[in-house]
Structures are given as structure tokens and as C-alpha cells.
Image 1 (cartoon, protein in one colour):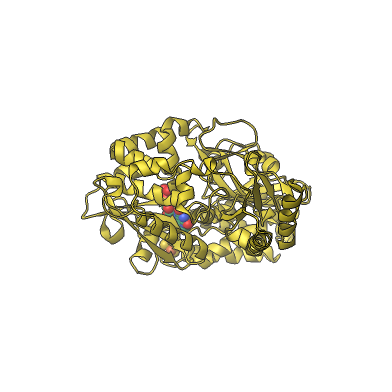
Image 2 (cartoon, rainbow, N blue to C red):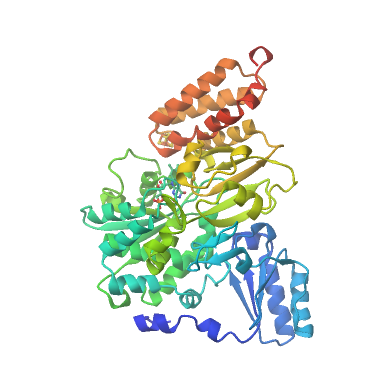
Length: 548
Ligand SMILES: Cc1cc2nc3c(=O)[nH]c(=O)nc-3n(C[C@H](O)[C@H](O)[C@H](O)COP(=O)(O)O)c2cc1C
Ligand code: SF4
């Protein structure tokens, strides 16, 4: 593909629907699908189709979110609703092709609810009820992430076109302000405000960084978006670069995400070839390039000052803030850091308008949030829901409750920085504010469902142990405090704890929250404090008898 013009972008939209005239099979080939055997399914489909000389299409797509049912295959026939099949094997794939080729009908076995039934796409009016609403994941499981044409076909790079041809940076910032979009990396900082501050900061040059470190155990929303719709994040970053006056952007992605890295690198290459990166993008007086940097899987490197040190080639340890990166960041220049999901929202806010976005969600928590729901749940996977939906709707109605059919004990949100929410509070709406009131946080989107067989003492031990392992050791409250609390917790778990240990744990936890240098140490005590808040009896049951 050569350099695209504004007219080319319009001409290439919606072509696939107009020219859709033969059966088309899409195979979910993100990390979750591949781990479940999607490669073999893909090959079986291609071989069978070729052996029967059928004129059908087989393409790869990203993760549709139904990870527990992978490998997933979607069968499309012109004029009919798509049908989705789960838990496919190469044998089932061959049968599927043979069945349709011979009988012109699709088998019923292994059918699962399709994307159209599970979710509405961005742009439709919000529906009520426990349905998903896809803004961030609108293309995941729909397009071939390695094919820029499929992205452009679904309106890709239209937001960039709109911005470069008709909006000033200030107007973009105003639209983001109207939208109420907040950062999805954990802290929920208003996006417009960070973009405005970075733009206003003086420096030799400005930088934008996409934070794809995703270190929370159990969280993989960002990986899925990078793998399933890389151009959406690239486009969001280019727009961010235009607004803050940057010429260079960096993707910081953990090296343990090889497929996400590969797809982002391909997307950058394709965008460059199409003239969507480089000099005078779409004929505008704006030039921008993107580079990729790999992290080595340290949780602390997701913290923005540590991330900057890591990109600079230094050891990834945090520094005191202020100065914030928006004032003095990468190579001491103004730097805007945004999370993957945050950037994936940008194009839709600008295409549909800030008011449209603000109409989805609840109060100061606008738009949607993607969660990775795991643990003892029947259907684990990714769900994208409008904020304000209750936890119960997510874990019971969308994810089917517990796999055993027994009661839910608690839900953990926010990973190692979050907390437990007991079952009697599941009717709480998912907003930044409501989760905080319960002693947890929205976090980046990890959601672990516990049933009655799970121990909160063990869960607290797991998260604290994780933070102690991942602490960079730079400041004493986190380095020493974390180790000491873990020692007491291990004692309690082993039946050797005393009453006063609970007092000491709470005291040290509060000191750690107040005195630690970065968010890792400041939030590491959250899981144990929330466990003590709601389940102190479980800790007491393990104390030595005189102390019960
Ligand atoms: C220990 C630690 C780890 C973090 N890890 C991530 C991460 O993996 N991804 C991310 O986007 N933000 C992470 N953050 C938050 C970032 O520091 C930063 O706030 C975020 O990337 C800003 O983007 P946003 O405003 O779009 O949310 C982490 C923070 C801390 C303290
Ligand atoms: S709080 Fe922990 S991770 Fe953060 S700087 Fe201090 S020692 Fe390092």
C-alpha cells in the first residue's frame, strides 16, 4: 500500500461488506486462542478448503473475550447471521467445512453465543441489561489485526483524518474534557488534563509513551487489545502526539508479550508505508514516528517514572514526583504516558463526540471498562461493560457465576493494589468512586472471583508476596515494611500468629501506605487491609489458641 490520501481513507471504508460474496471463516488467533490450539484449527480449515477446491476465505482475528471457549471460530455466510463455534479441534474444523460444503447448513454442536449477541458495537445507543458494550474491544475478534485494510474498512484512521483536517489540539482537549475519559492504567486521572498539561510544558521536544507493561497477575486486557486491534492504539497515540506537540512516541511492552510486540511492530510498519506515520501525515504539517521498547517483566517498571528510566536504558526504579513526567519525563523532556486501553478509547471519543462517550457509564466514571475475569468463575475471559454496571451483573450474569454452581465468596479487583469485595456487596456499581469506598480500586481491570473454598489469608499472602518480590528495594518503608508484614502473615497462615501481630500488621501497613516512594509500596498493603476489614475472623481462626 502506498501513501494514503484523505480521499483514499473514505474510499476504503466498508468495502468488505459490499464485496462479501463467499463463506468467510475467522479464527481467534491471539495468545489465548493459540495456547488452546488455534494454529492447528486454522491449518485444518485451510487444508480442507483447499482439498475440496472451495472458494472460501479463512483469516485470523484477535481475542473476542470468550477465552474459556477457545479456540473460537466464526463462520460467516453472505446474507446470514454469523455463527460462532467454541472449543474447536482440527477434527471439528474439518467437519464444519465438510458439513457446510455438502449440506449448505451449519452444524449445531459447539455453537456459542456470537459477538453480535454478546455485545453491541461502539456507536449503537447503549442498551440496558447485563450486556457488554464494546468501545475498546470493538474490533477484537472481528478484524484481522495484521491487516491495515481491515482496520481502515471499519473506520480506522478516520479519527486521525478528522483531527488533522479539522481540529486544533485545544479542540481535541475540549472534546476529551466533555467525554470525562479517565486513564485506564489504574489511577483514573482525567485524560484531558494530562494532555493539556503536557502540551503546555516547555521543552526541547515532547514525547508520548504507551504503557503496555501490564504487570498485574491475572490481568491481560491490554495484551488482548494490542494483539487484537493494534492500529487503534497506534492511531490513538498519533493523535496524542499531535495534541501535545510530540514527534516521537514509544510503545513500552513487556517482553513476555511476543505476539503483542509482533503485531504492534507490524502495525507501525504498515502505518508508515501508508503515510500515516512519518512526515506530513495525511498532507498535514505534522510529522510523527513510533518506536517500540521492551520491558523485562518487572511489575515496578509499569510505574511511570521507573518506566521512563527503563526506556532511557537505566535500571527501572521509581523517582520522587513532582516533577511529574508531563513536566520533566523522558530525557528530562515533557512526556505523556497513557495506558493501552486509554489510547484505544481516543478514536471513538473523537469520532462519536465527547457527549456520546459521557452518556455511557455513571457519574464521573464515563465510558466502558474492560475486565479480565478469572478465578472460580464459570466463563473466564474478557468483558467490556459500561461503567455503573454492578459487580453481580458481571460475575453472575455475564460470566455465569461460579464454575461449581456454589456461592461466590468475594471478588478481588485492582490486583496487588486493590482489595476484596465480599459477596454481600456485589450489587455495588462498578465506578472508581464506589470501588474505592469499599476499600478496593478499579485498577487496570483484573477481577478474580473467589468461592467458599478459597482462603482470603492465602490470597493476601499471594499478593503481598508478589509485591515483596517485585519491590525494587529503593525505599525502606516498602523494602522493610513489606518483608515484615509478610513474615507476620506467614506466621499467622502457619498457625503461629498472635493477637498483637494483627495490630502490628495494620500499623505497619498504614506506615507503608504513607511513606513509600511509589505506588507499589503505597498500595501493596491494600489487599491485606481489605481482607482484615471483611474477613478478620479467618485470620483469627489461625492464631495460636490463647490469642483467638
Ligand atoms: C507499581 C505500578 C505498576 C503500574 N503498572 C502499570 C501498567 O502495567 N500499565 C499501565 O498502564 N499503568 C501502570 N501503572 C500506572 C502508571 O504509572 C501510569 O499511571 C499510567 O500508565 C498512566 O496512564 P493512564 O493515565 O492512561 O492510566 C502502574 C503504577 C504502579 C505504581
Ligand atoms: S515503594 Fe517499593 S517499589 Fe516503590 S520505590 Fe520504594 S521500594 Fe521501590
